[in-house]
Amino acid sequence: MSSAPAQGRAVRALRLGIGFVLFQVAWFCCVASAARGHAGLGIAAVAVVIPILLAMSTNRRADMQLIGLALAIGFAWDSFMAGNGIIDYASPQPVRGFAPAWILAMWMLLAPMLREPLRWMHDRPLFAAAAGGLGGALSYAAASRLGACRFPEPLVAYLALGTGWALIMPILLAAAKRSDRRAPGSEERA
Image 1 (cartoon, rainbow, N blue to C red):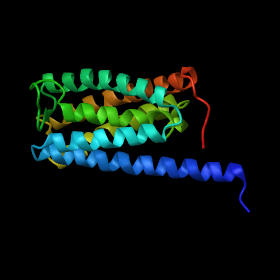
Image 2 (image 1 turned 180 degrees about the vertical axis):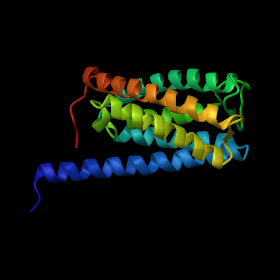
Image 3 (image 1 turned 90 degrees about the horizontal axis):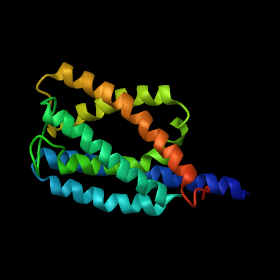
Image 4 (image 1 turned 135 degrees about the vertical axis):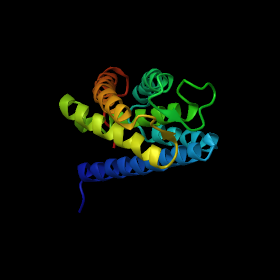
């Protein structure tokens, strides 16, 4: 016989699992399509996945706030990386030297993952920094291997990516924690 709390945990785990799989599929679609010169296909995949993630969200308003924040940080960060020649992006539209639309779509895709799925990191800023530094650099390395970007000077790129993401991830997670507390409807739903 299962209890209501056990069913709630099972539903939450299923929701988080589906969100994780959708995130991974959209990430791959975005990177692979940008690498082949068809960035619009990946952007379309993200445009389909984000509303699904928001529909499954326990706090849509907080997640939408995070999408705006992640988009702003992502535009600044990836434009800095592109403008300084640290990363050359495939499908660099609309303007070379700035963050391409497909990478901005991926920043938007990351945002709904920050609040509930990564809640376990909210009070672990040092771990978040380490995970961000390593995970961020590895994510870009995977994108590079798939042909979505290249690093003219790989050592410089990896150092910049690791350092940048070690700073960005704790900032985003702190914002996720703060927005979850402030936004109406922040009570946990099953």
